[in-house]
Each structure stands twice: as structure tokens, then as C-alpha cells.
Image 1 (spheres, helix red, strand yellow):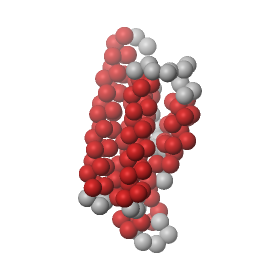
Image 2 (tube, one colour):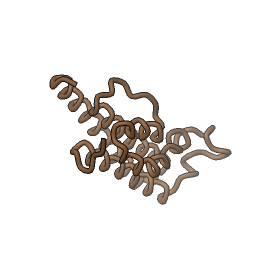
Image 3 (cartoon, one colour):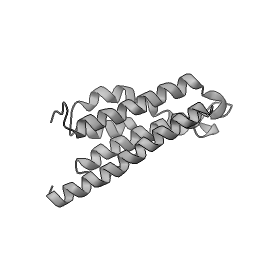
Image 4 (cartoon, helix red, strand yellow):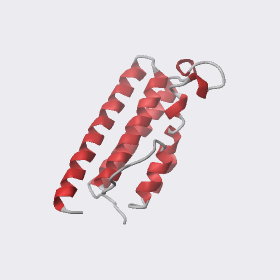
Length: 144
């Protein structure tokens, strides 16, 4: 990767990380307001955008998909240590649809199915994924 394209990739990754942080902050506000399903979805989004930032920073021109398990697999091709976070990150995948659409649940609506324990744990995982990515981008413990 040339220096110019590396700088462009870093700038684009920073944009993704900034939005990931905002999604996690918005998730916390929703949790505090009792909107636990929305908070869980935003936790998944924060983690997804964090992983996308890592892949973009490492030269991916396009990142496809929303599943954290798949994004971690893509990241593992660049840094095997992503297997550590994958086992936790994939717990957020169920919130991509389940926290938004009544059709993803067998009766009821997401708002009634999620509680504070769900949203607190989801946001914790989302923050863990973001911090993991930040450490990898800083070069801490990176294995290639």
C-alpha cells in the first residue's frame, strides 16, 4: 500500500471508528431511557463499524456484510488474535435483526423482549470490540 493510500485508509478508518463510538454512546442513552432493544442494535452497530474500521485501515477496499462472526474471520486473515474477540462479538449478531423487527421474534415485539441486562451486556461487548480494534490498530499485541 502506498503512503498516500495508507493515509487515506487511516482517515477512512478513523471515520468508521468515530461513528462506532457515537453508536455506542447512543446505545447507552437508549439503555438509560429504557429502550433496550435499540441499545442492543446500536451495540451491534458499534462493533460492526469498529471491525470495518480495522479492515479498512488494513487495506480492504470493500467490506461486505453485517455479521460480526464473518467480519472477525476477515480480520483473522490479517491478525490471528481476532479469534479472541470473535467468540464474544458474535453474541451481538442476534441483535442485528432481533432487536429491530417483530418478525424476528416468535410473538411480541423487540421492545418487550429486551431488558436492561441484555442492553448492558450488549454495550459492554460493543465497547470491548472497539477497544480491541483500537489496540490492534495501535500495534499492541498484533500477530501477522
